[in-house]
Length: 136
Image 1: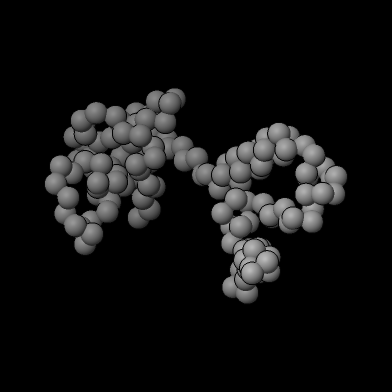
Image 2 (image 1 turned 90 degrees about the vertical axis):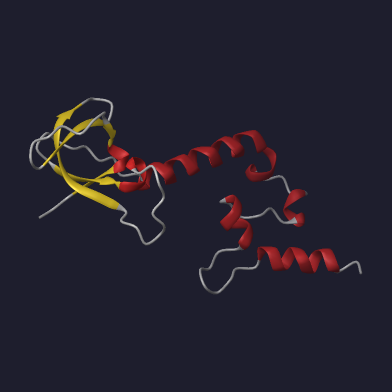
């Protein structure tokens, strides 16, 4: 019975074959500190507050590296996210995007005025997150 916690610990920290990551590292973004490491004074076990801050900075860098900021110019053709405009949900088989629209005015905060290809203004401004570049 005394070995059960050690067996569970080994299971939680053993790398898996599919991705080479432990379940703990997938959840928390760092490797687990084993019970043997707790008694040894290392930078990782003594500076807990600094480690927390470093973990937060690493997660932020990871997120920011993958964020693609899209800036559209006046005259660009874009598609608009359909779920933002529709009052009724059309189900998962409904169209995701609608358009194309033309950017008629660009504001500095990432919002845009749209117009149809016939030149009719679309009501309100639209956030760039809800738009995708359209290529003919």
